[in-house]
Length: 429
Ligand code: PLP
Image 1: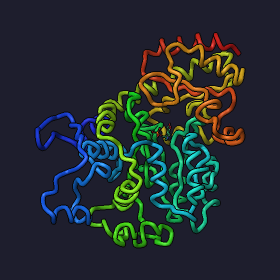
Image 2: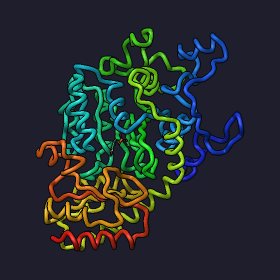
Image 3: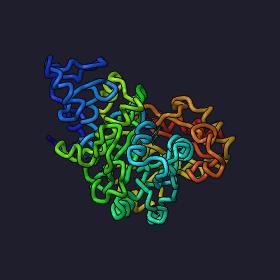
Image 4: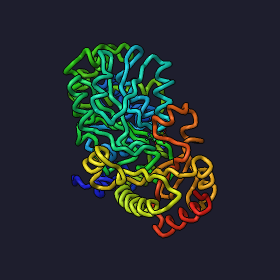
């Protein structure tokens, strides 16, 4: 099989339907699967054989999506879920329980921040936030109960590229996996190539690409030794009473290095039930076929918009990896040589009033909470996506009053620039 993403996005994980020879991936809209015999059923439940049991836990349409995205990232196996939010929650809960902690970058999507600062905290999992500018901050925040590191590659809204290799190497020193949310940068960077152990996605964004379906995914890099330090990773190395005492790092060894992701499927997904529907998996697969073309167009258009905004007097600052300086610029060059993403932040000199006036004046851009759609999108985070955060928390995540987030689509660049120009004229300085 090719290693080119353009080809993998069309061919990985599927040739034709074994039952009908259909070329397009069918939507297997079924809840259950007929077992061949009582022995077969028992083997499936006992993990002595792999196969379909029930669509909450696996589905043939979803299976193709899992294989395809895993192939794009160079992972060994993946688990699709009902949303990106569910992917981040399960990625952490798979290794951490009450009394444990993880260390996370401060540069996070607002929803992930809330999950970490409130919901996981209520469940007894402490999240220690550190500034990724200094990778060693992860080491300093680590103690005996630290189970994972967590970060976003191209964090929205700060858009500072995360030092993946640096933090992954620190984690490996301690036996701690780095979980990377790569939602904003599919194909632009492959975090496994830099030492990350787990990748999560909101498929809702660039991978699906068309703003039709919510979905999430966790991908196992198969590159992390979960057994090396059993005391560090007890959930993978002690008997699991919810699965007749299975020790996950041992139980599935014959199936390959998939202990982390298989455990998540047969315990957390089984119990918490955040399954993706086969129909959404199908729609996201359709979108993913053109991921390479779209990412190229998003990046080219965004570069042109950065140039345009940099010349406008109303704009105090344009935030994009290409405008970074110092160590941030070095990281942007190191990790994003293939394109620096479709998201742009701009800080308007007129603060909140100008930000809101700009949003109101937009004609073609959609005013939505989403990112990664084919269409151009805009939002004022301080009054929307980040409004549940305190003022200090907003600033820590990079949101000021005048910040407007733009997610540049694949329309003709002249139309994108024309809409921005007239909205800036209307909003004023
Ligand atoms: N991660 C990032 C970087 C996001 O931007 C989002 C959503 O905006 C999520 C995770 C959550 O994804 P979902 O909306 O699919 O639950």
